[in-house]
Image (tube, rainbow, N blue to C red):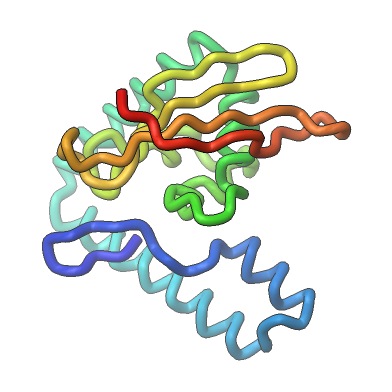
Length: 173
């Protein structure tokens, strides 16, 4: 995440998997890969420093995030949530992809991918599931409800049964 003054936003850097794909395809050099990964590391360190400055707020946020994931997992399954988050992490130009790119890694707790109040926020407000399709309403960006971006993401299973983007549109509700 990048913090610029009082405006908090998602990183504009390519996600680590995208960087490695670019490197493997010869689109960027090893030096460019390493430099960009260092920027990702710096962002993570900045976030850890912020968390360390206010551990009580970080603890309360973690509890909120865990409660949100429990609620979602109660309606669906943790495995489905992980699969949906992972697919959303691969959507080009989707700002929360920087939170979701490693959602398929089972050692990462699901609550790490939700940010209920800590900016930039990422919340799942509704999820409708059918066997071959999932519709997810998300909010992300600023915590202020009037300034939050709302989108409807529709994923469908491709011939290999992996979720991929079918539709993405701004949601005003």
